[in-house]
Image (cartoon, rainbow over all chains, first blue to last red; front, side, top):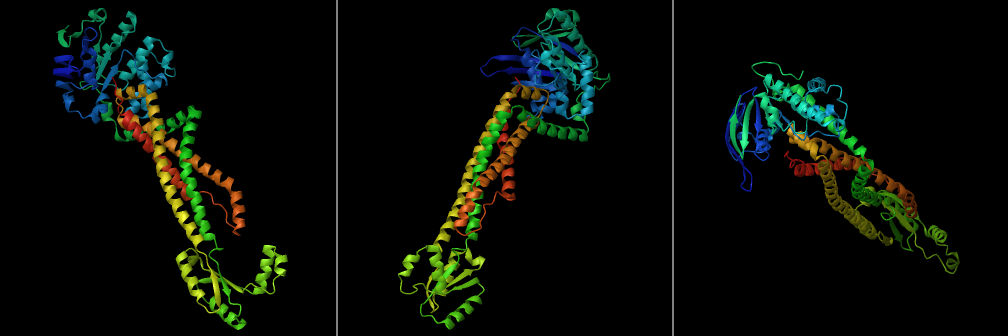
Length: 220
Length: 328
């Protein structure tokens, strides 16, 4: 599903954020991306989101080479990917419902369909009944879950998360991880960047470790 | 349900597999939503919006008002029969029969619509009444005023100084006619002034249109800046550039449209304020001329120009600023 072939990313100024990465994630695979801050985790996720383009190497998603994707096609590509941020990136000028509905509205889903899917997504993250609230009135954990609901409401095939548990206590973190796990079990390819080794150690999942832009791997 | 079904082929890229009719319905929905949302946003900050609308309105009202005034002046020039009327002063020794023949020949002409004979006694009486110089006139031995024939050229001729002068020359050649008064310079000046006024209105219009474009562009630029976070998120979850553009284009449209409506009202108001003094002025020229407000054509031009400038200004701002916002 996600295939990196000798991917390097060098920022202007000469600093190489990622060098010669090669790995493959199968459909429905669940993997962690670990490493210290500055190791290149975010850069790697940005490459998959096409927020950055690789300096060299091939990045194939579902068999398609992203290098050949024209920039006008980027929005349509992004609709197949769900992404969760540490800074949840919610919009405080609208309700929880409207935040979660945004990807579906952009894709032009029928209104009735949107209502059904948004409620299902909120139900999944345990926030059903809060859809008319403003996310600013929610706790950090709840905001993070709204972000997750928004990332999965359009049933993406790939789910990326950048430090999704960064602001959460251990109990909530474990809950969120379990949620991600469920998505992978139904075929979504999940890649989670985190530095919280203690949290993921017991899960025994595949781990892609970045160190100064180079990858080493430990697996289950 | 959010839980994707367990299957060998997970349903994922639903965006690509939606029915076309659904996508079109969604597209229309976003248009409707952007259209009303942008209006609601304007109403949410009424003072600020009103100020912008008024700036646009004044910029659009200036050329529109000038155009309306020039049009009025043009109508006035067409309406003026004082100047288009010619006075044929007859020789003192003209015999009554000759004068009658002349009158008949003038009345039979197709380029004259009105022929009025004023004999010298009548002319003196008129003069006495209008001048108030009774005391002085008593001192005169006889009647110094000649008999006069007033002729009014038909409407076509009345607006063309060249033809009028040609006609005057022709009439002056008649042996009974001592002198002819057909002053066309005033008409020429008025027509030149109207032509210049029209051009000036065009130039002013073009300059102020550019101003409106920049005002709206700048307003939209600020709106984009205020919604930077939203644009970032929208782009991250797959919003196209045109999706991002849409609400701002509607905002620009509303600014231009409402500015044009306000401009139209301003012009009406200005004309209404001027109407009374215009009537008095016209009365002095023995004209029943009335100031006309901006017509339907002015209204349509104003509203379409305003809307197009609104859209255009927003387009410039969006191209430059919204497209540049990329998630980081």
